[in-house]
Length: 262
Image 1 (cartoon, rainbow, N blue to C red):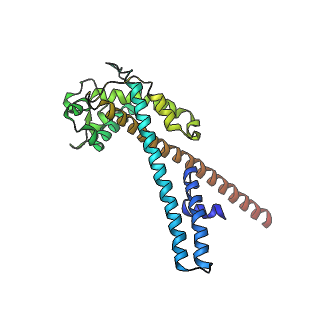
Image 2 (spheres, rainbow, N blue to C red):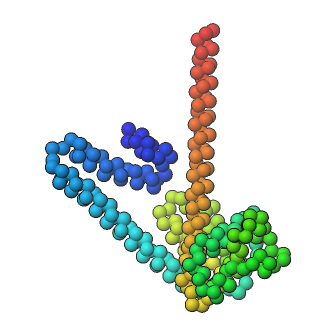
Image 3 (spheres, one colour):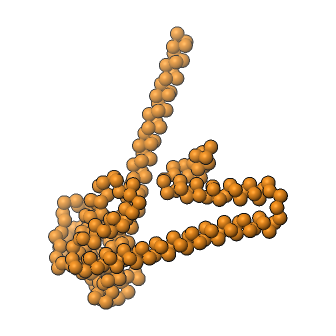
């Protein structure tokens, strides 16, 4: 019965959403019983609801503060390590052309949607360029060129090479399916990223702040797409199993009818 109620809220709950729904039901059900059946005054009704509300708000604020402190600590640690690993040149990867197209396109998306990182003109020159200024033998921007109608952003070679280096680490981290069972998987991924050689983007004044934010935002984007991919994979396997079971049940029912008629 409990699982059926959870499925009525989310037909395919993940571990996280399952826990959230359980907590909501644990609060909602006692309050619902008290308000409907208890012989109490209206003031007591409101007091119960206010107590629950204050409890949830306090928990939310505590979690938000802890998450903000964790982000600051992670970014400082990331930049402290990356500051020792700046290089002047990174090799261009031509092994996975489709992957390179997508990395370049995502890089342009991040620049366009996070303009606060590039308010400084010196910073903009290190990450944003024009299509004509890219090398003639560079083809990772082909997908962006095919889609743009004047609104997409072209990033510099340095920006693209840096994200390629980060992507290599993130992809290797995702190759192990165990990462989905690790509580601090994002922190573990950032710990691997900080050991990567990258190019020094942004100006000297804003590099420490903007570089860490850009890298962490890129890893967050990759985690979002990875979660979508895993959900699609798991749902497709589940649907295949359900269809196979339905087919077996239908065949068994047909066989039983034939045997009963004969």
